[in-house]
Length: 316
Image (tube, one colour):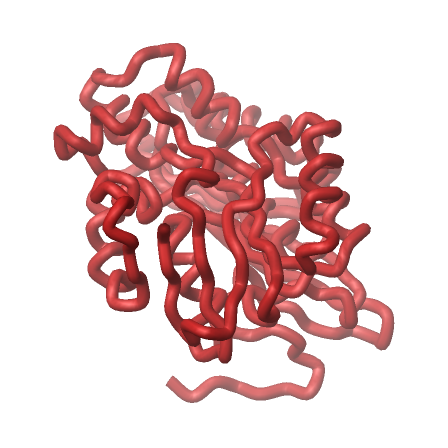
């Protein structure tokens, strides 16, 4: 599909970045993104919180500050009590308040399947935009949240997940990437994305696709909810995991010591996942330490960028 070009378009659709960026003047650009999905939890208020945090995250992943948002609602008015929608919207609004984002409107339609999310507008300096490309050899790779939400949500639908595990997953999904993004502005970010529907390895593949670098990921360093191993071994996994694996596995090399279930977890589609970014090795430990001090306890150095395996990821 031919794309429309514009000299003020900083980031477009070409490389699958998390949002579009358009320069308004030399010191100001706008960020635009949109995301919505079906419920991942039963509680409508929590669903609203998760959906809003997920939508807003794309602005943080671009190095920007979210400013305004509009609700996107698909609701089966003849099948569900309107009170459910009210709770969803309340959850979303409370999360927007936490992010200091102003709700300015929205759009709703009647649909047989409930869906909710946001269109979010943010701002950033045109020369301080983060893209999902740009990693350099020697960079460290950092992930800020634990993996496993897709598998846990699938187990929850089958009433197989322990409530304690579900509660921890909900806390993770509801947490904003706001503070992590703010701290990252103190260092030299070479590439950044957030880990969502394509899973850790899917988004990592996007970061090196068409570039002159590859990645090595230390499987023992990646944070994930260890209770989900049992679910994976029993085949309790979302369909998106298998699609991610089929689409990107040709770019991934796996060391003999890495179990198959680990690769499945690394392809698990995440909801409101963490930021995945690369930066100079000399700055990595300090930023992770600061994140831990600020309560971002799962932030971890999970690998490095190398030039020897161009366009490939080694999981070892």
